View 1 (cartoon, rainbow, N blue to C red):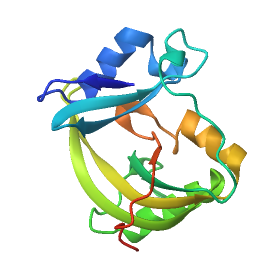
View 2: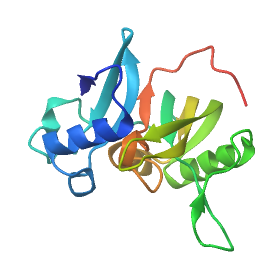
View 3: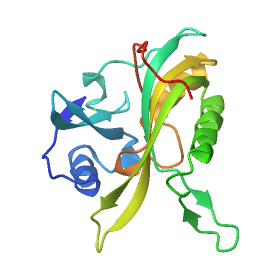
Length: 181
């Protein structure tokens, strides 16, 4: 499902608006991400099929083993600090741990990465005084290794946290121009 959003909308505002429309994300289990459609900012939303509005989108069908797809995934990747126990991001220029995270999540969720481009940025979440978080954008191609696990990842997301537009695995026909990493 696509929803047009205002050009100046931030992730917290979109998060709050979607919660108001469909119920709290943590309870309902919907996933969303930000993107563009024909030059306009949009939120892509995946509602669970059991939700009252869940059947308004396309159903998630189990792909064939070995199927190949292009994909996009936006994630907030952190690591646990051994001294403090707090979660923190890697240095933005350090791509290798982010690729390692994607490879581990792929194995866990029934897919392997064939090619990927990784872009790291930051976004400001306007909640209270606000805070900055890193966002890692993955785009490339993948191959399905376990259809059941992959279908579960499409429905439930990839990673631990699905708030603020992170974790939605989007798939589409693969592009022949994807860079190999």
